[in-house]
Length: 131
Image (cartoon, rainbow, N blue to C red; front, side, top):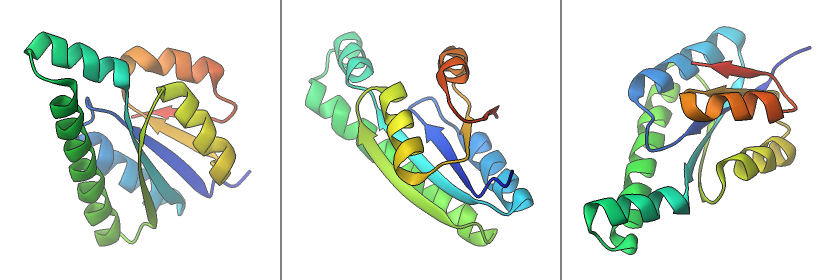
């Protein structure tokens, strides 16, 4: 089985090391990299409550952080000759992942967030690679 398309799932907990690992992985297997940053409304609300900020302010900051991460990933991917497609969505993490898998014919999932990895691994219809 050939793996042509991988989906890297990014959240507010993502760091550049996971992005570099994803780019290098896709380069080594000659596949395309779809990057999805998911803004989870529940997390935004909790963070707003904890920091005593308005939800809209926290949401906007989260969205800005998401695009920054996606553009950093794109820069590294371009430097390494890896095709990328950038996406930022708001919603339930598992639903968004499944939507992208179905919509884009994703062959494999790249993920770092440890607290969600088990749920994703168990419920995914495609291979999951933890970075």
